[in-house]
Amino acid sequence: MEYDPYSPTIQRDPFPTYRWLRDEHPVYYNDRLKFWALSRFDDVLAGLVDWRTYSSAQGVTIERFDKPLPMMIQSDPPYHRGLRSLVSAAFTPRRIRELTDWIRSTTRQYLDPLVGSGGFDIVKEYSFLLPNELFCELFGVPAQDRVRVKELFHAGFFRDGPELPQSARSALREVQAYFRDLIKERRRKPDDGFLSQLISSRLTEEDGRLRDLTDDELLGFCWLLVSAGGDTSAKNIPNTLLLLAEHPDQRKELLEDPSLVPNAVEEALRHSGPAHYQGRWTTRPVEVHGTTIPEGERVVLITAAANRDERQFDNPDRFDIHRKIQRHVAFGFGIHLCIGAHLARMQAKIGIEEFLARFPDYTVDESGLERAPSGNIVGWAKVPVVV
Image 1 (cartoon, one colour):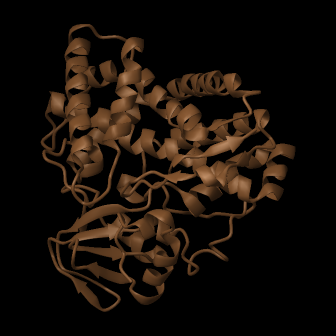
Image 2 (cartoon, helix red, strand yellow):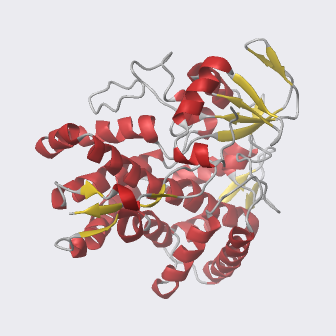
């Protein structure tokens, strides 16, 4: 058996392989793709927390990029700390309240026309649109550009191996060129959007000096929020609705008591969250379970395997909306805990509430299900439902 995140077996159902890794190869090495993998909860958590040993500065995925953008997800302190503080300052309680109202209103705009349709594809007609529209709203993308920008996002997320396919490279180049132009425009004519806030912010250097963000750093923020936020949220809602379709008794409970939705969202993130691993590079030799991982090695922390670890969770393969979850690693942990976790939870909560309110008896047409080729963000390209 082999753990290859891009293989059809893993794309189809990775969890038997994850169990094999936890039980038989808790410190795994893929000689073909040249990476190590940790899969048990305690080991993954330790890797996420110990940023001095497991560095993010050389990227957090297996696939390689031509010219990686400077991003806080791909950085270590102190640089990481300065970038993260800028984003934290932008998401004020007032801004979060405004976004909550916007998300609910926009969700209804997407779902209301589907009532009485007889059926539709959840991904195409709903889950892909909402988070990417949110990103466009946050960054002030003009309405006339949003369809094309979303198409580029979709193409840029395609993965089928450790090297980026040409289609994704082309899409990334085009979307980066677009946002470079938008950054220039916002420098010239600021508005009240998130991008203009970042442009007016000052980054604190290690020696205490303040400086403006470069265009590359601003572009890095743009791509981080759409890739780490847009792609994951687009896949999280279908994953959750599929689980509820497979467990109609628990769906019935949510319909009768919507206050259970937040915990159902949390359990879905643990059980079938879209983010399956985070990549790191070792800065020193490190011993795990008697095996030494050398310095300068790629290590994959399989968070989705950790969230199904029976050493941490009782009956972990069971989906249970009443599960009392003390902690999971669907959003990572430590200094790289997803800064948009609150926003992602909010999108999922509102998305599930509004969907169930309109389509309480939906069924999934399993013959039309289609996986989205991907690396570390796992989900569906098509989820047709009958309503």
